[in-house]
Image (cartoon, rainbow, N blue to C red; front, side, top):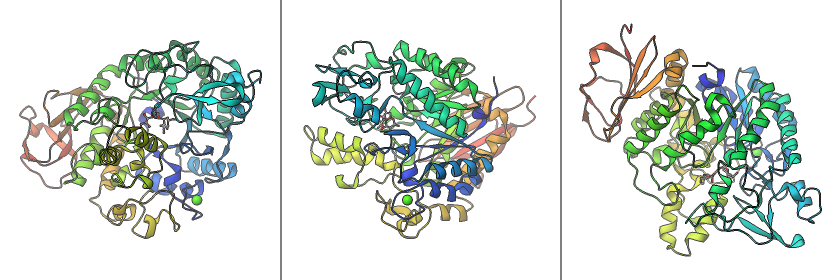
Length: 542
Ligand code: TEU
Ligand code: CA
């Protein structure tokens, strides 16, 4: 298997607005990130991914870009950014940016021009229709918005201030390549490519099949032409730099994933969403009770399908998802559950992505009042949902699923506002910051934070845990996860008791043949305890 730095790395995702506020205006910023670089380095990660910091009206917290070359003043200046990059590289870390090129903000100069008249040179940068088709937006409702001056509608697959770009237009592609070179020349090490499988749309934008949700998806998801665009960017830009790309591909199967990542032909790796649907029916608001076996099955499916042909990403959290420990188990055993989850995703084959705060076990904020939520998706869903469901029912869903659960300020210590800022933050701090915070986690040698550090170090020291083959040794068991990582030099086993009760050890392992490399329990036992996890290494593997 091909060895590359980005396969061996661990990535740490920063949501800049909520990470650290250096000038005490209640908003996280670039200088705040610089202050925390030693913390990040110390955790043992290699790459930092920044959610968008570009200029933006912030309707979708920066995923609505109005200028690809400028930094939003809330976060600092381009000089601050260059300084950050320099400080990152000084510590032998790398930095990747978010790349949002499926749409721009309607405040972008291109759109401001485009909307003026049909013969404006920028008009064709976007997608228009005189009568809207039936496509729906990811954030609910129609994907079309009326524009007075040209008497037509523009397409927005996300919020209505996020206008989809027309990638058929060569000028759009050239602009994007120019922009990518700008950041790469500055020294940026790669990109996380937002909804990259949506770039191409069926020409003429015809109606989609009748469906309840995602109407039109067969016309904009994984359209054949998207591959042409990605190959073009790769050969003209990415191939000329030592950078890496991870594509966010919504609703993707392993077969389709390989069309992007097999032999890294278009992207180096991608985010799939299958394991994010273990507690819902593939649409996040249609909730179903969580079952560990679904998580295990989703992981195993991707491990087998991608092995030797491409490379997986491993993640449990990001800025769009609820906190993993509020979701994938029960909070009766927060340390055991969160450390077990950490081992589960960090020890599979793929590049692990840790979301800020995950390493200290941050939980869902679970705000109970709709005004406490800031996220555009949450408010849209509330408005639409209220047409059918009661306030109580909608708040229950939101409390569990809202993206704001992951977006509350990073909990640094037990001082006011969790040490994130001395001013009132843009979004409320999770009230549990006095017990869950970085300062405490560092102090306590038995904390989740130290468990993460150990795991990251062990992964780094053992190439078998990076590149070795994965095999699920108990695919049918509902609450025990047992998998193997193996190459010609070593064999490891990861054993998890995915249950809040004791269980018997699986008979198939002869424990005398293994040494324990890591466990989340400090004492030994002949049975498995709640959410116990251990990493075992075969003695004298031939
Ligand atoms: O998310 C893509 C996406 O499809 C989202 O709708 C995701 O499924 C949803 O957030 C789950 O609730 C990306 C970004 O990660 C997200 O923050 C942006 O809002 C979105 O693209 C539009 O740029
Ligand atoms: Ca600030």
